Image (cartoon, rainbow, N blue to C red):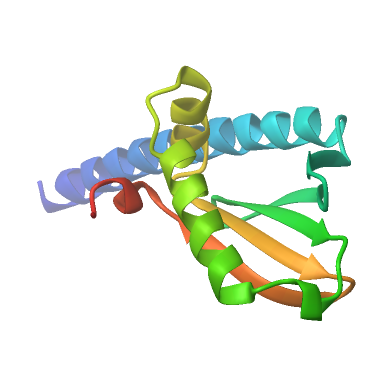
Length: 134
């Protein structure tokens, strides 16, 4: 009887693991599709001085890389970061079906990374929890 329970427990855990693996594979495929389709449009001009040049993923987090066409002296980093964070949060927390799909596809959130040349100026990390805090 003890061995039957052990075998049953092992079979149940294998089934559960395969379900998790299947969900992870599905999620990974969805992430790859989203990123591959988006990359076809790169680079994208965001505004007069900002270009989105790359999109990657890391541990269910989508990463956007932006390059600002300015010198560091021309950019007020704290003000730019604050304004950018507020705008991105408003967009990320919206009820748009596309944004909801993005949040579902990347449960660890989104990281927006801003550079001048090869120097990182700042990052804005948003997660689903960002939408519940004020």
